Image 1 (cartoon, one colour):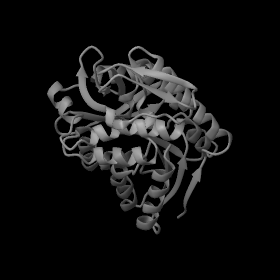
Image 2: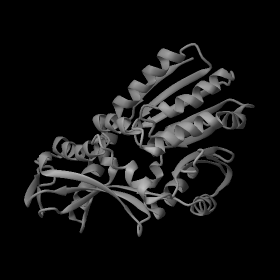
Image 3: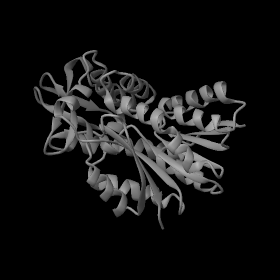
Length: 332
Protein backbone atom coordinates (compact mmCIF):
# COMPACT_ATOMS: atom_id res chain seq x y z
CA UNK A 1 0.00 0.00 0.00
CA UNK A 2 1.11 3.61 -0.52
CA UNK A 3 2.41 6.11 2.05
CA UNK A 4 2.62 9.77 1.00
CA UNK A 5 3.08 13.19 2.57
CA UNK A 6 2.10 16.54 1.03
CA UNK A 7 2.79 20.03 2.36
CA UNK A 8 -0.06 22.27 1.19
CA UNK A 9 1.21 25.25 3.20
CA UNK A 10 3.45 26.80 0.57
CA UNK A 11 3.34 29.90 -1.59
CA UNK A 12 0.04 31.79 -1.43
CA UNK A 13 -1.44 29.40 1.14
CA UNK A 14 1.47 29.94 3.54
CA UNK A 15 1.22 33.72 3.13
CA UNK A 16 -2.50 33.57 3.90
CA UNK A 17 -1.85 31.56 7.07
CA UNK A 18 0.83 34.05 8.16
CA UNK A 19 -1.60 36.94 7.63
CA UNK A 20 -4.26 35.11 9.64
CA UNK A 21 -1.74 34.49 12.43
CA UNK A 22 -0.71 38.15 12.62
CA UNK A 23 -4.31 39.35 12.54
CA UNK A 24 -5.32 36.98 15.35
CA UNK A 25 -2.43 38.23 17.50
CA UNK A 26 -3.23 41.92 16.92
CA UNK A 27 -6.93 41.48 17.62
CA UNK A 28 -6.24 39.38 20.72
CA UNK A 29 -3.77 41.85 22.23
CA UNK A 30 -6.15 44.77 21.66
CA UNK A 31 -8.97 43.01 23.53
CA UNK A 32 -9.77 43.83 27.12
CA UNK A 33 -8.80 41.56 28.75
CA UNK A 34 -6.16 40.26 26.35
CA UNK A 35 -6.94 36.87 24.83
CA UNK A 36 -5.06 34.83 22.23
CA UNK A 37 -6.40 31.58 20.66
CA UNK A 38 -4.58 28.38 21.58
CA UNK A 39 -4.03 27.33 17.95
CA UNK A 40 -1.25 29.94 17.80
CA UNK A 41 0.87 27.70 20.05
CA UNK A 42 0.95 24.74 17.66
CA UNK A 43 4.15 25.06 15.69
CA UNK A 44 6.29 21.89 15.55
CA UNK A 45 7.67 22.38 19.07
CA UNK A 46 4.27 23.32 20.47
CA UNK A 47 2.83 20.11 19.03
CA UNK A 48 5.62 18.13 20.70
CA UNK A 49 4.91 19.72 24.08
CA UNK A 50 1.21 19.00 23.71
CA UNK A 51 2.07 15.36 23.06
CA UNK A 52 3.78 15.40 26.47
CA UNK A 53 0.54 16.74 27.97
CA UNK A 54 -1.47 13.86 26.52
CA UNK A 55 0.90 11.43 28.24
CA UNK A 56 0.40 12.95 31.71
CA UNK A 57 -1.35 10.52 34.05
CA UNK A 58 -3.68 13.25 35.32
CA UNK A 59 -4.76 14.57 31.93
CA UNK A 60 -8.03 12.65 31.73
CA UNK A 61 -9.18 13.63 28.17
CA UNK A 62 -6.33 11.66 26.62
CA UNK A 63 -6.47 8.78 29.07
CA UNK A 64 -10.25 8.44 28.69
CA UNK A 65 -10.05 8.47 24.91
CA UNK A 66 -7.39 5.75 24.92
CA UNK A 67 -9.73 3.67 27.07
CA UNK A 68 -12.69 4.36 24.75
CA UNK A 69 -10.75 3.28 21.67
CA UNK A 70 -9.56 0.10 23.35
CA UNK A 71 -13.01 -0.77 24.67
CA UNK A 72 -15.11 0.18 21.63
CA UNK A 73 -12.80 -0.44 18.67
CA UNK A 74 -14.99 -3.29 17.42
CA UNK A 75 -18.09 -1.09 17.53
CA UNK A 76 -16.31 1.44 15.30
CA UNK A 77 -15.03 -1.33 13.03
CA UNK A 78 -18.54 -2.73 12.56
CA UNK A 79 -19.67 0.54 10.96
CA UNK A 80 -17.14 0.15 8.15
CA UNK A 81 -16.80 -3.59 7.74
CA UNK A 82 -18.73 -3.79 4.44
CA UNK A 83 -17.09 -1.28 2.06
CA UNK A 84 -13.69 0.42 1.54
CA UNK A 85 -13.49 3.69 3.45
CA UNK A 86 -11.31 6.65 4.33
CA UNK A 87 -10.41 7.86 7.84
CA UNK A 88 -9.65 11.60 7.92
CA UNK A 89 -8.18 12.92 11.17
CA UNK A 90 -8.25 16.67 11.80
CA UNK A 91 -5.36 17.79 14.00
CA UNK A 92 -3.79 14.35 13.98
CA UNK A 93 -0.60 15.24 15.86
CA UNK A 94 1.28 12.01 16.57
CA UNK A 95 -1.87 9.92 16.03
CA UNK A 96 -1.21 7.74 19.10
CA UNK A 97 -4.85 7.15 20.01
CA UNK A 98 -5.85 6.58 16.40
CA UNK A 99 -3.22 3.83 16.06
CA UNK A 100 -5.54 1.65 18.16
CA UNK A 101 -8.32 1.91 15.58
CA UNK A 102 -6.01 1.67 12.58
CA UNK A 103 -4.38 -1.48 13.88
CA UNK A 104 -7.76 -3.05 14.60
CA UNK A 105 -8.99 -2.23 11.08
CA UNK A 106 -5.86 -3.87 9.68
CA UNK A 107 -6.27 -6.96 11.86
CA UNK A 108 -9.80 -7.29 10.46
CA UNK A 109 -8.43 -7.10 6.90
CA UNK A 110 -10.36 -3.91 6.10
CA UNK A 111 -9.09 -1.95 3.10
CA UNK A 112 -8.97 1.76 3.86
CA UNK A 113 -7.08 5.03 3.49
CA UNK A 114 -5.92 7.13 6.43
CA UNK A 115 -5.55 10.89 5.87
CA UNK A 116 -3.98 12.70 8.86
CA UNK A 117 -4.31 16.50 8.54
CA UNK A 118 -2.27 18.76 10.79
CA UNK A 119 -0.96 22.32 10.61
CA UNK A 120 2.42 21.05 11.87
CA UNK A 121 4.61 19.88 9.01
CA UNK A 122 6.98 18.04 11.34
CA UNK A 123 4.20 16.17 13.14
CA UNK A 124 2.63 15.08 9.84
CA UNK A 125 5.89 13.90 8.33
CA UNK A 126 6.81 11.99 11.46
CA UNK A 127 3.41 10.30 11.63
CA UNK A 128 3.51 9.14 8.00
CA UNK A 129 7.06 7.82 8.44
CA UNK A 130 6.11 5.96 11.62
CA UNK A 131 3.05 4.34 10.03
CA UNK A 132 5.06 3.29 6.99
CA UNK A 133 7.69 1.69 9.23
CA UNK A 134 5.00 -0.39 10.99
CA UNK A 135 2.31 -1.03 8.39
CA UNK A 136 3.93 -0.93 4.95
CA UNK A 137 2.62 -4.42 4.10
CA UNK A 138 -0.89 -3.84 5.46
CA UNK A 139 -4.33 -3.11 4.00
CA UNK A 140 -3.93 0.62 4.80
CA UNK A 141 -2.80 3.48 2.56
CA UNK A 142 -1.71 6.78 4.14
CA UNK A 143 -1.76 10.31 2.72
CA UNK A 144 -0.55 12.92 5.22
CA UNK A 145 -1.46 16.56 4.61
CA UNK A 146 0.27 19.50 6.30
CA UNK A 147 -2.40 22.19 6.03
CA UNK A 148 -5.39 23.61 7.86
CA UNK A 149 -8.52 21.52 8.33
CA UNK A 150 -10.70 22.80 5.53
CA UNK A 151 -8.01 23.07 2.89
CA UNK A 152 -7.27 19.44 3.70
CA UNK A 153 -10.93 18.42 3.52
CA UNK A 154 -11.27 20.25 0.21
CA UNK A 155 -8.35 18.25 -1.19
CA UNK A 156 -9.85 14.97 0.02
CA UNK A 157 -13.27 15.84 -1.42
CA UNK A 158 -11.76 15.81 -4.91
CA UNK A 159 -11.43 12.02 -4.44
CA UNK A 160 -14.95 11.20 -3.26
CA UNK A 161 -15.01 7.50 -4.14
CA UNK A 162 -14.83 6.28 -0.53
CA UNK A 163 -17.09 6.65 2.48
CA UNK A 164 -15.45 9.07 4.92
CA UNK A 165 -15.07 9.00 8.69
CA UNK A 166 -13.74 12.33 10.01
CA UNK A 167 -12.08 12.15 13.43
CA UNK A 168 -11.90 15.29 15.58
CA UNK A 169 -10.54 13.98 18.84
CA UNK A 170 -9.07 15.02 22.17
CA UNK A 171 -11.78 17.54 23.10
CA UNK A 172 -10.35 19.97 20.55
CA UNK A 173 -13.89 21.16 19.86
CA UNK A 174 -13.92 22.44 23.44
CA UNK A 175 -11.40 25.11 22.41
CA UNK A 176 -14.26 26.86 20.57
CA UNK A 177 -17.12 28.93 21.94
CA UNK A 178 -20.48 27.21 21.34
CA UNK A 179 -21.52 29.32 18.29
CA UNK A 180 -18.09 28.73 16.71
CA UNK A 181 -18.35 24.99 17.43
CA UNK A 182 -21.71 24.83 15.66
CA UNK A 183 -20.32 26.71 12.66
CA UNK A 184 -17.33 24.40 12.59
CA UNK A 185 -19.35 21.18 12.50
CA UNK A 186 -21.65 22.72 9.85
CA UNK A 187 -18.58 23.50 7.73
CA UNK A 188 -17.32 19.93 8.18
CA UNK A 189 -20.73 18.64 7.06
CA UNK A 190 -20.59 20.80 3.92
CA UNK A 191 -17.20 19.23 3.12
CA UNK A 192 -18.64 15.71 3.27
CA UNK A 193 -21.24 13.57 1.51
CA UNK A 194 -24.55 12.09 2.57
CA UNK A 195 -23.88 9.00 4.66
CA UNK A 196 -20.35 10.01 5.73
CA UNK A 197 -19.53 9.99 9.44
CA UNK A 198 -17.77 12.15 11.99
CA UNK A 199 -16.43 11.09 15.38
CA UNK A 200 -15.95 14.00 17.79
CA UNK A 201 -14.37 13.87 21.24
CA UNK A 202 -16.17 15.82 23.98
CA UNK A 203 -14.88 16.30 27.50
CA UNK A 204 -17.95 16.10 29.75
CA UNK A 205 -18.77 18.34 32.69
CA UNK A 206 -17.55 16.84 35.96
CA UNK A 207 -16.25 17.79 39.43
CA UNK A 208 -14.41 21.15 39.16
CA UNK A 209 -11.53 19.76 41.23
CA UNK A 210 -11.02 17.01 38.66
CA UNK A 211 -10.97 19.64 35.92
CA UNK A 212 -8.52 21.81 37.84
CA UNK A 213 -6.13 18.90 38.43
CA UNK A 214 -6.16 17.93 34.76
CA UNK A 215 -4.90 21.35 33.64
CA UNK A 216 -2.42 22.13 36.43
CA UNK A 217 0.21 19.39 36.48
CA UNK A 218 2.96 19.44 39.13
CA UNK A 219 5.67 18.88 36.49
CA UNK A 220 4.99 22.20 34.75
CA UNK A 221 4.27 20.86 31.26
CA UNK A 222 1.10 22.93 30.92
CA UNK A 223 3.00 26.07 31.89
CA UNK A 224 5.74 25.26 29.39
CA UNK A 225 3.09 24.71 26.69
CA UNK A 226 1.33 28.01 27.33
CA UNK A 227 4.53 30.03 27.67
CA UNK A 228 5.76 28.55 24.40
CA UNK A 229 3.24 30.90 22.80
CA UNK A 230 5.64 33.75 23.63
CA UNK A 231 8.48 31.96 21.83
CA UNK A 232 6.24 31.54 18.78
CA UNK A 233 5.35 35.25 18.77
CA UNK A 234 9.01 36.20 19.05
CA UNK A 235 10.01 33.89 16.19
CA UNK A 236 7.13 34.54 13.79
CA UNK A 237 6.39 38.22 14.40
CA UNK A 238 9.64 39.66 15.73
CA UNK A 239 8.22 40.28 19.21
CA UNK A 240 10.45 40.82 22.23
CA UNK A 241 8.57 38.92 24.94
CA UNK A 242 10.81 37.82 27.82
CA UNK A 243 9.37 34.47 28.87
CA UNK A 244 10.87 34.67 32.35
CA UNK A 245 8.59 37.63 33.06
CA UNK A 246 5.42 35.53 32.77
CA UNK A 247 3.78 32.68 34.68
CA UNK A 248 0.81 30.42 33.84
CA UNK A 249 -2.26 29.23 35.73
CA UNK A 250 -5.35 27.25 34.71
CA UNK A 251 -8.75 27.52 36.42
CA UNK A 252 -12.35 26.39 35.97
CA UNK A 253 -14.77 29.22 35.16
CA UNK A 254 -18.34 28.18 36.10
CA UNK A 255 -19.89 31.02 34.10
CA UNK A 256 -18.04 30.09 30.92
CA UNK A 257 -18.47 26.34 31.64
CA UNK A 258 -14.80 26.00 30.65
CA UNK A 259 -11.30 25.52 31.97
CA UNK A 260 -9.35 28.66 31.08
CA UNK A 261 -5.59 29.11 31.10
CA UNK A 262 -3.93 32.47 31.59
CA UNK A 263 -0.39 33.74 31.48
CA UNK A 264 0.29 36.60 33.87
CA UNK A 265 2.82 39.38 33.42
CA UNK A 266 4.84 39.50 36.65
CA UNK A 267 5.73 43.17 36.13
CA UNK A 268 4.68 46.24 34.20
CA UNK A 269 6.23 46.07 30.76
CA UNK A 270 5.88 47.09 27.12
CA UNK A 271 6.30 44.54 24.32
CA UNK A 272 7.18 45.50 20.75
CA UNK A 273 6.00 43.36 17.81
CA UNK A 274 7.93 44.31 14.69
CA UNK A 275 5.65 42.55 12.18
CA UNK A 276 2.68 44.54 13.48
CA UNK A 277 4.58 47.79 13.93
CA UNK A 278 2.99 48.20 17.35
CA UNK A 279 3.73 48.12 21.06
CA UNK A 280 1.52 46.56 23.73
CA UNK A 281 1.43 47.44 27.43
CA UNK A 282 1.14 44.78 30.14
CA UNK A 283 0.35 45.82 33.69
CA UNK A 284 1.85 44.01 36.68
CA UNK A 285 -0.06 40.73 37.10
CA UNK A 286 -2.26 41.46 34.11
CA UNK A 287 -3.71 38.18 32.74
CA UNK A 288 -3.79 37.13 29.10
CA UNK A 289 -6.02 34.15 28.30
CA UNK A 290 -4.32 31.51 26.15
CA UNK A 291 -6.64 28.48 26.40
CA UNK A 292 -10.37 27.84 26.61
CA UNK A 293 -11.65 24.27 27.07
CA UNK A 294 -15.45 24.07 27.19
CA UNK A 295 -17.02 21.14 29.07
CA UNK A 296 -20.15 19.70 27.47
CA UNK A 297 -23.31 18.07 28.75
CA UNK A 298 -24.95 15.29 26.71
CA UNK A 299 -27.95 17.52 25.99
CA UNK A 300 -25.64 20.14 24.49
CA UNK A 301 -23.97 17.49 22.31
CA UNK A 302 -27.37 16.31 21.07
CA UNK A 303 -28.45 19.86 20.18
CA UNK A 304 -25.14 20.54 18.45
CA UNK A 305 -25.52 17.46 16.24
CA UNK A 306 -29.20 17.95 15.40
CA UNK A 307 -28.92 21.69 14.74
CA UNK A 308 -25.98 21.10 12.39
CA UNK A 309 -27.50 18.45 10.11
CA UNK A 310 -26.29 15.19 11.65
CA UNK A 311 -27.89 12.07 13.08
CA UNK A 312 -26.30 10.69 16.24
CA UNK A 313 -25.32 7.07 15.64
CA UNK A 314 -23.61 6.13 18.90
CA UNK A 315 -22.04 7.61 22.04
CA UNK A 316 -18.87 5.84 23.21
CA UNK A 317 -18.02 6.46 26.89
CA UNK A 318 -15.09 5.70 29.17
CA UNK A 319 -15.77 3.80 32.38
CA UNK A 320 -16.21 6.96 34.49
CA UNK A 321 -18.38 8.83 31.95
CA UNK A 322 -15.80 11.61 31.97
CA UNK A 323 -15.51 11.72 28.19
CA UNK A 324 -17.48 10.70 25.11
CA UNK A 325 -16.53 10.06 21.50
CA UNK A 326 -19.76 10.71 19.65
CA UNK A 327 -20.32 9.23 16.17
CA UNK A 328 -22.62 11.21 13.86
CA UNK A 329 -23.89 10.51 10.33
CA UNK A 330 -24.11 13.30 7.76
CA UNK A 331 -27.68 13.93 6.60
CA UNK A 332 -28.38 16.12 3.56
